[in-house]
Length: 182
Image (tube, rainbow, N blue to C red):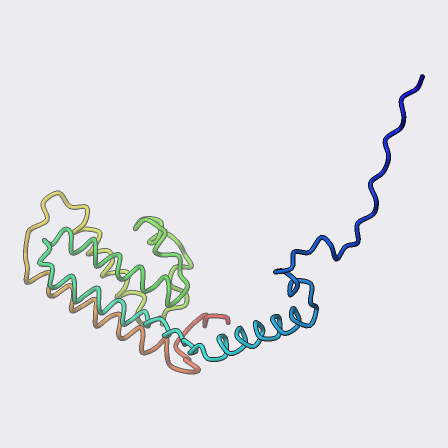
């Protein structure tokens, strides 16, 4: 009346499941040896790798000098040169003295009372005058194309940045009103 319940298969020993060619996969000693050899290979690979020491970044004055040299070589007109010179000065001041001059317009910069506080007092006025001249040349509708004036502006910019750099990089500079905090 009721069907016969299914019969369970006889239990097969685990060793019968391994194929004769795979006996080494179950050997713990072999696995231990493989892990040890692998660890040795990784250790010697990492140890033998030559240590690459990154070069220190170039100084801001070196970057400014390179940009000034490339500006002279480019034979840009006075309007473009004044724009580039203004960016070079602002970039140098921004990174060397931590002044946000790079991110401000000329008007914002000239009206900010704490502008250039980390710059030697004797150099603030020449910076402002030079940036004023650059602004006049940048925004003037009738900027002449005078290559000699470009060379003169590049030379003035270079001299100004080197004077500032020599003072900023002096240890225990007493000419700073607010020395940078580290």
